[in-house]
Image (cartoon, rainbow, N blue to C red; front, top):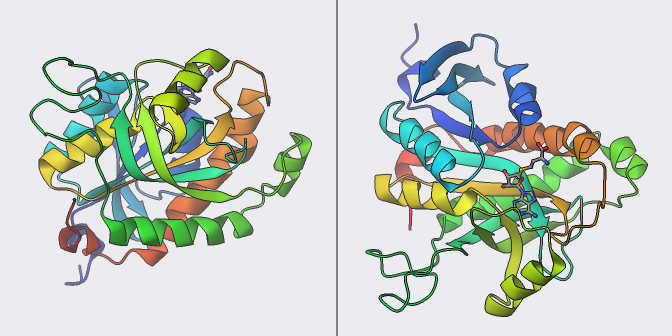
Length: 266
Ligand code: SAH
């Protein structure tokens, strides 16, 4: 085994929200070994020659916290990349677009009057920020990856146009937001919010606790207003999974080995 063997590096943790997204990664892992921990199946192996641990996140804050904590503590990952779907809240965030988080917040955290609304007790902040250098890189590779990915037919078939990439605030909570009024309330409290989902801000908090860099990338599957914008299964199979695969592969090429050790979580 050469001194440069990637197995000597800490693996990259890949958290996917949907089984189809995880499967698209596993299909390209030549040597994945299955490890059971905490009721989860972790797939330890290589993708493009890089050491990775791929796992299904689980839906919701606690499930994601357990998964991320195990990646950090039991598998010793150097960083975590989360991919999944989300509801679009920003005015120009459309179904099929991709949102890269540069800030994450738990919209259902409210320990007021002890702490201001949304503030994470003990941390003194409500928003967590992935390292800027990693976010910059993610935004540029996502834009390129979306051009490469052959989802045009699927996008067109679902009545979707060319996807755009957005960068900004993603909020998470233990609620699938499907009432237009709830979406409006979130926009009123957090005017710069772009997307809502159920795990990203948790991954941020876990990674901050362990000093790990992280990225959260979400394909927009709905407008969080209860309308059936697209057939969800077709969207995940035809759009979100190819996006996840293209984005992860492009990121593996763009983020050098050991970058996780150099990037500081902020
Ligand atoms: N309908 C899907 C379940 C999606 S569950 C199925 O049958 O499999 C919700 C997942 O999608 C969570 O992981 C969450 O992060 C994300 N999500 C997508 N749109 C969302 C929205 N409008 N509100 C909250 N979470 C959303």
